[in-house]
Amino acid sequence: MAYKRIFIDSDVLLDVLLERHPYCSFSQRVLTKAKHKGIEMGTSVLVIANIYSIMARTLGKVEAKKNTMRLLNTLKIFVLDVGCINLAINSNFDDVEEGMQHFVATQNRCDLIVTRNIKDYKESQIPVLSAEHYLNIT
Image 1: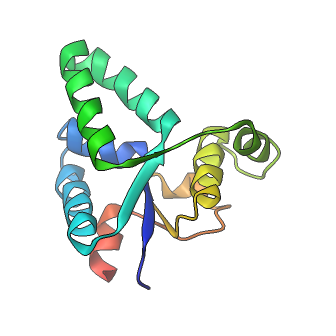
Image 2: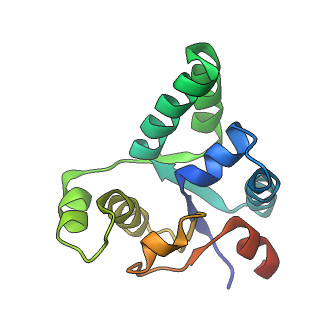
């Protein structure tokens, strides 16, 4: 399948930003490959907030701000609205936060979610792949 718009979950971005091995190389290659193919990549405002918080604790606020600005220049940021929150709370997703990400992705017409946390997306209405699997099929 030719993907046109993909939702990038927080773990994929954190793998790159925090250089978490062995995942960071797959995640970086996904971002690079999608960019070169002209695939629009996005994530939710909730992911950005969570990532900033984790990076601030891990790398410090200065580095967290710098990395967050890089993300804002690389990804489309999708709004998490009350409709997505309600859908997630009333869905069959075990993890409400992952449900929110899913409904943000579907609301913004993403045709794929890239994450390492595939098990929490078993209720997804769109395909969900790990970075490594995405690289193997595209």
